[in-house]
Amino acid sequence: MLSIEQAQAHILSDVPRTGAEQVPLASAYGRVLAETIRSPRHVPPWDNSAMDGYAVRAADIPSDGSDVRLELLEIVGAGRMPEHVVRSGTASAVMTGAPIPEGADAIVMVEHSDGAREGHVTLRGPVREGQHIRRAGEDIAEGSVVLGPGARLTPGRVGLVASLGVPSLLVSRRPVVAILSTGDEVVPPGRPLKPGQIYSSNNATLAGLVHEAGGVPLDLGNAVDDLDALRTRLGYAVHEGHLVVTTGGVSVGTYDLVKQVFEELAGDSLDFWKVRMKPGKPLAFGRVARGGRTIPLFGLPGNPVSCMVNFLQFVRPWIRTSMGDPRPFLPVIDAVAGEDIPEKPGRAKLLRVVLDSADGQVVARLTGTQSSGALSSMAAAQGLLLLAPEAGGVKAGEAVRVQVVDAQFLAGDTPSYGW
Ligand code: AMP
Ligand code: MG
Image (tube, rainbow, N blue to C red; front, side, top):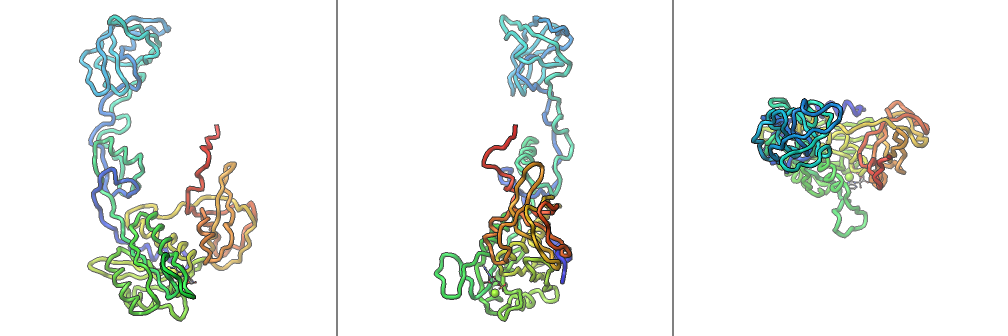
C-alpha cells in the first residue's frame, strides 16, 4: 500500500499549468495572479495631508502651546493643486488627501484652530515638523514589486492594484473539471428511484469542491456500469475537461469497470492504488495525452465521504498547482482532542471533526459515525483530524493536528470582539 504522501508526490510530480487570461479587476477576486506587478507610480503620488487642517511652517508655531495668528492664503480641497507658496507667517487650509503646498512642512489639524476668519487663522501648537503629512510613495514606491505570480487575489490585493491605476490582471485560467459518477444504482436527484437505487450525492459534492478549489465544474452526470457507456462518457470527459474526476467502480467489486476503461485511455500511465488511508483507500490515477495536452484521470471511490476526503487530498492540490498556487494544500492547525478517540494503527486516519476555538486553543470533537458512507458526518465536519498510520487513538486533551476543511468554524453568531 502507498502512503498518502507517496500518492500525492506522484500525482503532483508533473502538473501542467492552465495558461493565463486577462481579467478586469472586478472579476479578479479569488484568482491566482500569473504576472509580476510593479508599481508604475508612487502611491500616494505626492505628499498629502492626512487631516483636514492647515499647512504651515512648523517653525512658525510656538512650541510652548501658545496661539499664533497666520495669514490664510487659500483653501485646497482634495483633487485640487495649491496655488500659493506657504512662507513664514502664512498658512493654507488643506483637506484630507490634498497635496501639501510648497513651503509647508507640517499640518495643524482643524481642531487646533479657531476656524479661519477675515483672511486669518489662529493656530495652537506645539507642532512637529512633518506631522500629519503622508509622504509620496509611503504606501508603494514607484518601481517596487507589489505582487508576484502565485499571489491569491484577495479584495485588499485587488484594491492595491486598482490604486496603481492598473485596470486588469493576468491570472491563471480556471481548469475545467469533468465530473462523472458511475454505478447502476446511482440516479440524479429529481428522478424517481427504482428499487435498489440511490441518489447521487457525489456529483453535487464534487461540483462544490471543484468550485471551492477554484476550478470550473462540468457535471457529466452518471454512467451505468457498462463498458460502452463508460467509454463514451469518459471519452467526452477527456475531450471537455482539463482533468477528469470519476466516482465509484475503482474498488474490487464485480462491476468495477472504471479501472478497465481508464486503462484503455491512460495505458501504462495508469496506477491503481490502495492508499494507506481511512476513509478513501482505493484510488486510480492516470494521464491521457489529448491534443498536445495531458489530462489526468482521477478515479475516486464511490463512498460519499471517501470521495470527498480523497478529492481534498489529491484533486484539490492538483487544481491549485495547475493554477500556479505555491501553497496548494489545505491549512493544518494544532488542536486538542475534545474526547477519547480509540483507533487502531494501520492506515492514516482522517477523522471528521467539529472545531471550537476557546481560551487560545482549538478543540476537535468527532462529528459522529465515521462510516465512509455517512455523508451527514462529513457535512457537519469543519476539519479532518489527522492520525498517523502507526498511531493508535488519542485521549481527550491530547495534542492533535487538524486539516481545516471549513474555516467558517471561526465565524460567530455575535461579533465576539471581546473588548
Ligand atoms: P463503489 O465505489 O462503486 O463500489 O461504491 C461504493 C459505495 O458508494 C456504494 O455503496 C455506492 O452505492 C455508493 N456510491 C457510488 N456512487 C455514488 C454516488 N454518486 N453518490 C452516492 N453514493 C454513491
Ligand atoms: Mg459501483
